[in-house]
Length: 475
Image 1: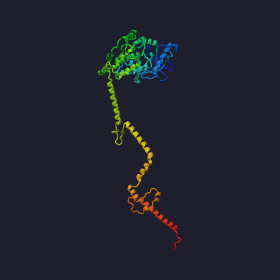
Image 2 (image 1 turned 30 degrees about the vertical axis):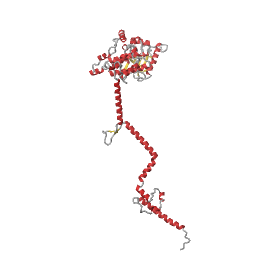
Image 3 (image 1 turned 120 degrees about the vertical axis):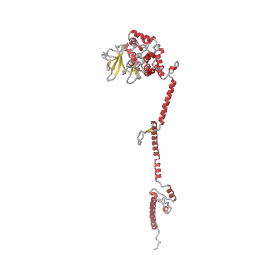
Image 4 (image 1 turned 180 degrees about the vertical axis):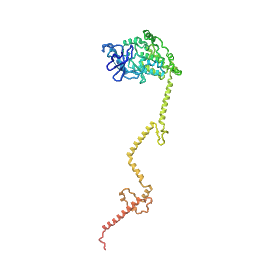
């Protein structure tokens, strides 16, 4: 029967997920594989006009709900769309479909009747985060209960669902709560149809109480009017049963004695938060989800209670431990930076692998690049001088040869023009040339010079004869 009516164009009705007096939730599918959850509100709207009070109230509340998703939060369901169904004219809110069980299912067999301390603290933190997020934008949920908190199997987060009551007017909300609400999670003021930020805080406390003790403080025996009134009256007047006694009573038999003893050590600060959330007077509770989240954070890091210091965590000890851990981290970081390169002994002898830390490798590469740039600059400015100096040092005669040549006024020319400038007198006395200078090259040079001298002397004789005055000569 749930598939008879059409939700809206482009949104296929795939059947009911949950039905109730406060509205039903259906599984919907958009074009393609996108699955959503559609919350149908119980009060129909026949005219989509601002003249219709119900439509006007619905539009106003939906506008408030849109603020919830202006900043995404992993612990709050995403609201995708809203409108009026094509058949039946019911207002609906389309939300993200969360795949996974809700808390009500997780507390039933085959699951344990209670949560472990670790999981309780995790849920307490994530649900407080969801409430803080909603209250920051002035949105009151009004229907926080076990089956409105789901565990997302894909992300591992607990997600707050179903903002149906938030989209109702005060009159609709009052009627819906009195006749169809989850009375076990309702704050005393909700019996009169009132809803505050502290109302959500009270329901939050009931959920934590259920996770610790394995049941709500005032269970509903049946859904009759008498039983509902008894539960509501108990919330208004009766003291909360000892949650730790309920926890001990509901400890799983399959747990070992050691585990049972450990799981009974619920932190005192968590029990104090639950007790404050469940105060009858709204002024004695946390003012909103923001204040609740701050108290949870303070408790989780070990806030000291002045009245019961023995029951609270010692902040000083935690701070010292934190300093010690930070010191260890710094020590290991410095040790890693100072650690020399290591040769892997398992590698073959002819192919050793040197392993060095990342900081040392980076420093080595910087030095290498700097040396390369420096060498390039030096060669650019002084390369010619360096080259000539190296060549002259490698190929010039020895010091003794130079000194001997200087003492006998011998010049070893390196160019052809220099050879022509040598004087004849420089080579007349060859007996004074040291043996070590009389090399093959010097001998060749002297032979060339001697031949040149003979040629020049002969030419000079001819020239002088031609120029001489021979008119007075008699033969």
